[in-house]
Length: 257
Ligand code: SAH
Image (cartoon, rainbow, N blue to C red; front, top):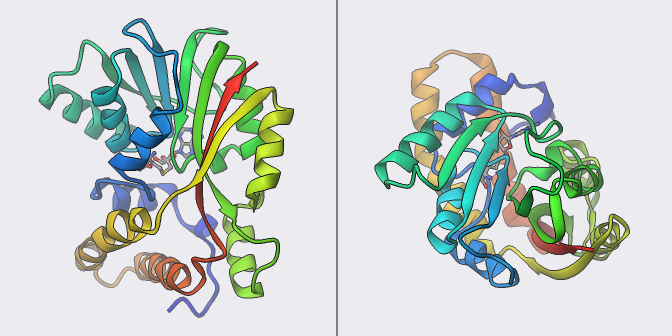
């Protein structure tokens, strides 16, 4: 239990990344929802250029690669994640179509209107939903698509405990309806929005962390910052099981007008 109310913002980025480097996913998701989101996107070919922003170690980047035929660039701020992704790309022999690069989602290394599709799972909160949709739009061709997952409220009201946790972690968190209207205002046709199912959180995000937490605590025995960080990660899981009817990730898919 994290009874001192630490916030994720108080931890060193390197510590968080070291922990997540040892995990297949850095956020909730699944192959099935990546493919489901892709099914709404109708203009892709082997000429398409796709960017996966905040790709982490790239589990969903590779699902994208295996289910499209275009050129894919995965981008993340953290070089270790990109090294892991580039190793996986090599192992799968996808180097001619897929690459990982280090960079920041608020200063993208693409040309105006270069991209057919911008993907981003569990990462847009780092720049902000509205800011991300506005900034990234310049890099999309007309009729290009954006597909992002973002933490969202399922209900208009929710208990104070979970409200406080998420407003601290993601200050812009809002309801699904509100986020769709932000997407529309930013100049996209909202094509689809669907909730990310529970198994994406439990089986693919929380359960794999259990062994990692034990291992990480052992590797950093006696390190108070690590102990507090792990307590925070466990708290995230407890809160999810208590309040999962009030919030979750939602996949938002939009088409640039
Ligand atoms: N898409 C992956 C990772 C999600 S975690 C998955 O679903 O598993 C969020 C990712 O955003 C992390 O990998 C983190 O390093 C990255 N990130 C945070 N701030 C960023 C920024 N400004 N630019 C690019 N990536 C960023």
